[in-house]
Length: 229
Ligand SMILES: O=C(O)CCC(=O)C(=O)O
Image 1 (tube, helix red, strand yellow):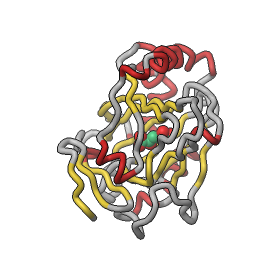
Image 2: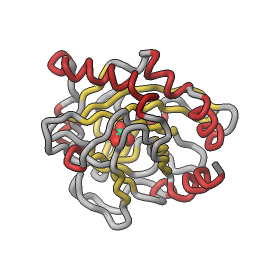
Image 3: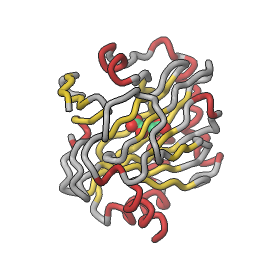
Image 4: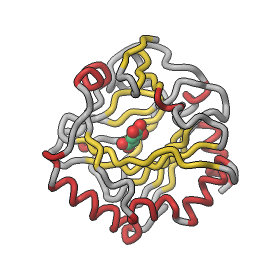
């Protein structure tokens, strides 16, 4: 456990392959399946957000399903969360983001405040194996220590030092909201889904991620406003 905490503090993220067994994620995966069959009923993100930042996804309404919450309330998830945030952490929000063909997420940090300890913890779980062409997860180790990005540039450009993660069933990736990451563009007809339950160390504002930053500037989710750098 110490290794995981040290990696998270040094890099702003850490990864555990096979954190859950395929059986443990099967219940959540059945909900994913259900909504992928009803894809056309779901709403997507705003046009401006998509155009500016290359974010193209839909949220599957499964975060309150018992099979979803069971993963994040599981004793081993609670143990690893406490190892990183301390005993006193609180839930922020949960979601399942699904990226279809041409979908992805450009380089961004979910929050703008680089003060150490002031971050929201993304707990990313994948309920099935994905192929590289469906969109890998890219992270920039150490980027949680500084504000924003060194320069503007394409949403999906390779950056020096980036680490590429291939999502697999049962994998857990813990990512600080202040660590730069992106999701590669899905080049297939098979939709890619990530389950995420965000938590905060007590005292960190629950709306910390209302203001996120992309390479080209900040975005306020609650008002859908671009705020520049
Ligand atoms: O889809 C993923 O693999 C990660 C998604 C993510 O980190 C985000 O929604 O900010």
